[in-house]
Length: 156
Image (cartoon, rainbow, N blue to C red; front, top):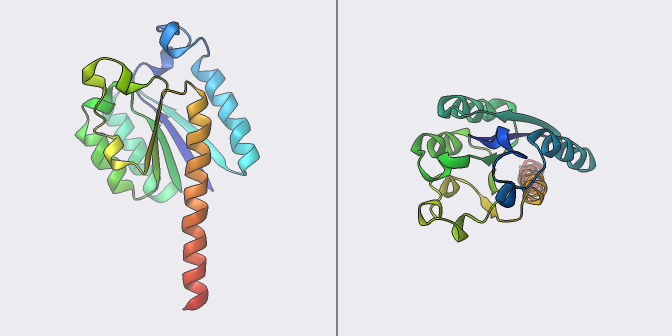
């Protein structure tokens, strides 16, 4: 099973940017932690971070044929990007959106997730721990989907 984790704008600044909100762990710390979680789950994981909306769309679209699921933190694009929303839907793989902070407890403009509407689930406000939960959820969704497909193929 192959899952891609995509981080959007400013997430490369984890550990430096507003540590009172985002903590002191870096993006590399997060990726190292997720590699360990993926190993425990028996999942192959890769990572993409970009501050560019187009690069994020490209990384999502590539999932359609190369990945079984997607974990995404679109950063500020969460609240503005119809393009990322559409790419998630077009990828046709289970997608779980994750946010370090609780987007509903911050500025009012952050409470709406355009991209989350294209995802199976949204995890928000659990810090970097939420990424591990998102990875677990994505793996479980794929396994459930594969189990259903196996059951159907055995019946047919």
